[in-house]
Length: 200
Ligand SMILES: [Zn+2]
Image 1 (cartoon, protein in one colour):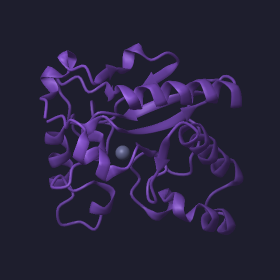
Image 2 (cartoon, protein in one colour; image 1 turned 90 degrees about the horizontal axis):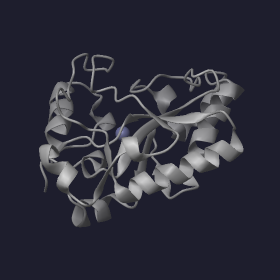
Image 3 (cartoon, helix red, strand yellow; image 1 turned 180 degrees about the vertical axis):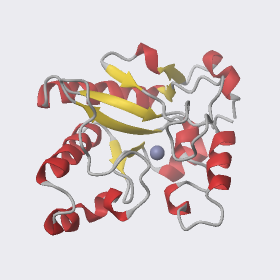
Image 4 (cartoon, protein in one colour; image 1 turned 90 degrees about the vertical axis):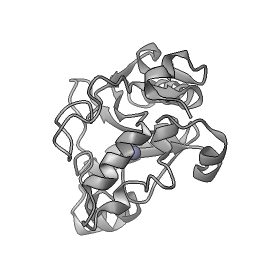
């Protein structure tokens, strides 16, 4: 375990500012999140484990080939365990806790091995993914993409945008999850929880 305040001196982690061609807008470091208040405050959370950082760089290179002019926009990366507890507590009493990992298990974000990410187009605008970041409803579930495409709730363009995001991340070692189009993990979750350093 390492405290977020001490992460700069820990060799496992890499700052996002060292990544080329990656845009960063950490939504929990501000009021533009479902919680509505700044969860990071003075904490610098623009970090990833170096393995995830390398994967993200490779994803950016693949994106540059597949869709010139587009960029990856990181919405959340390292999320200290103390903030994970705040998110979990915030959703207490709702049926939305499927969208937030139980701190008792540990979020893969707290190991710097998960990221929330979207795409921006040549004009600098976020691509339309059909729902916004952290929109906690079924239309955000990649597992249901084919169904939502068939019913027209997702347009072909929105579906293509999700497919492009998945193609560049999953082509570089990341894997998506069933219920959030924006979330990707590197490596198996249990392996990460057992063998990687959690940031508190
Ligand atoms: Zn996430």
